[in-house]
Image (cartoon, rainbow, N blue to C red; front, side, top):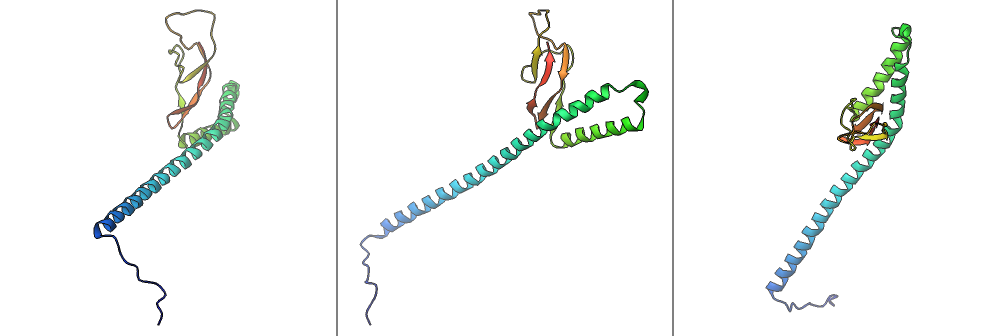
Length: 158
């Protein structure tokens, strides 16, 4: 019977093959570490994408919440206790609760508080110059954070 594969003569010694085995093992470990890092990066990018998508959606909802608050400020005194107004107030509270469950929190701004450019946007400066520090004179709209990151600064007059 004829042999299909000729006999291969091993010309190298045992040390050569041990070195090759170490190289292949190192390459395998490197590829495994790269794959683990790739999975970790992919997961982080996925979370950041969802966070960005959530932020965009929340920024579209915040004006609705602002409009509810503005409308509730202008209710005539005699209508404040009507069932219809209480229903509207309940809807506004539901919306605020949903946003809070998603990690949205209101930035607390008070009158005469020192202006903080990281949390506030000055849309107007009153005529009086105060050289020592700028203080909030009027709050035009509320600011919000999402999971500790400012997504909409509060608009104020200083």
